[in-house]
Image 1: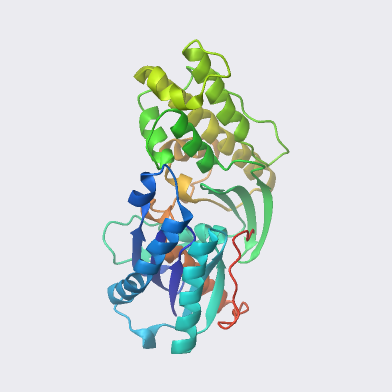
Image 2: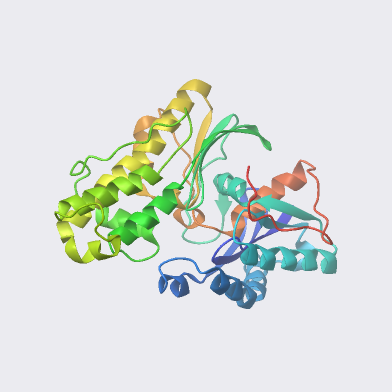
Length: 352
């Protein structure tokens, strides 16, 4: 079974072909990040225009890299949500048109759920990938961390899951981006903060961990605490403009703030994940989403959970078509409902 996956939820235009849910035959991504970096974040209009320009060549390249033509494709899977409305529309309308033209089954994919399925990719002939030796087993605990989501999800089986907890305000990736702006670091903020944190001391600033319900998260207070500590570090009060902080903070202060913030942010995730592991005793624990690439998070989770964790390849942490295609394979294999290619809508606020 070969499924073409199409992903356009944000600023990456991506397509991939996956066989049987585990064999990645191709994975093509065109990113417009360089354009967004000029503005310090994703600009929806620019993202949508980039998808229009890139989607046809990206899909063609994914098919070519997989050695496939349309006769080899058994189904199409496309991200329906969550994401930016304009971006999602390009991917969904393209997938609908292709499904009608080539008479292929169409499957609507939840973007957040798809990130988990990057961990089910265990084989590829593509160079430069480090994939798990075997797929995760059920029951599994999924730790989903990205720019828009922070969730703990217990999967009893494919498509049988419970969301244990999620962020009540900022997601962890969003908090990384906002702290990066406070420190004058470039977009994307996550990698920039993580790199600077290597030069700092994580115990230099005392920052709080939010006290939430058992498995819920909050990172807005932590972000504000970083702002207040930065203002105090230069001898200014709370009304000092955050936009002027980068020019006043020393390089050492910035590094220490980055290290202290990262330590508490990833520690919050690790603490909740450990608690869920102890309560539900899953057989597997997987990390998913863009922030899954953060090495400090991987280290703290490894120390917190007495079980080998499944980490996706770094190139599969960010948005990609392979995770969409992998989930599409399981939807087809397990006879989940197909989408109507004449009516499938986008859902920017789709949740698990």
